[in-house]
Length: 324
Image 1: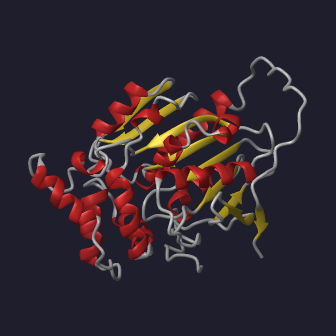
Image 2: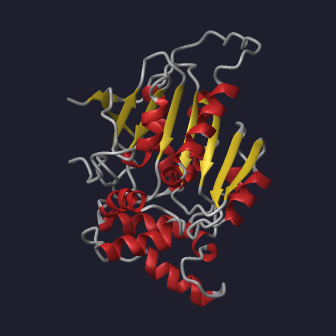
Image 3: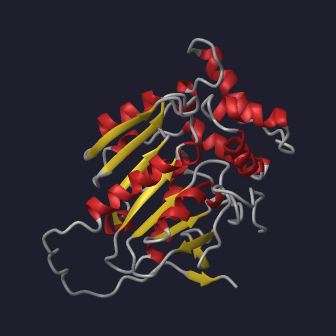
């Protein structure tokens, strides 16, 4: 697939990756993977959200790649990962497992950061062997585990059946988003970003979101509508931080508070005043600092040596192909 449209200059322009790879998921779905930064550096894995792509993490990649090995991938149907008929939380978990197993060495651990559906991906994979083997800590940005449509405040009326029905129609629309016009920017800003978001920030998000095929957008909207990962939240045993904007209409702070209360090892909940749903773009420095903090505390801090693993047959890695 061709690279999605995005800004080509400034802090939101995606850096050129050091390597581009294709990981193959359990059902054969092919996933575009990028790596940035020096080999052997502490590893960070980034999972983007609904209608986005690796370009969404441009600010984090640019800052972290100086001294981290940053791995970012396109969710199936997004960016340069081809669409698949399989759209489900389990498929997202399969894909994350494939990326982790293919890009991290046996025993290598990483900090995982997910935004929106990317954080839901981490929750969906909470009990998967690859997550247990490779995740040192996680950052869950602007996300929830259930009742996503019912709790959304995109439609500014009282909660209830009418608001839920209208929200379902808006988020599940099959209509094309069209070109990024001034009106399109205003609509996107209202629904997904804080009121103080700068024009260049809104434009960067709009270009990424508008590049998502409408069929993919529609298919994944149904998955998010029916999502229920409450039980899997309680299975996420690794240290986790939760981050949400107080002006988030898609996953309001009620979701972050619920996650913080349910996570077995929650390190804390941060609510960013005036920030909307697009936290890695709206508050790039804060998100990057949170990731760095997790790396320092859980990947590079001195600690007792881990016990030697018992001898046994090697575990095969997920298929990985080098992209020309």
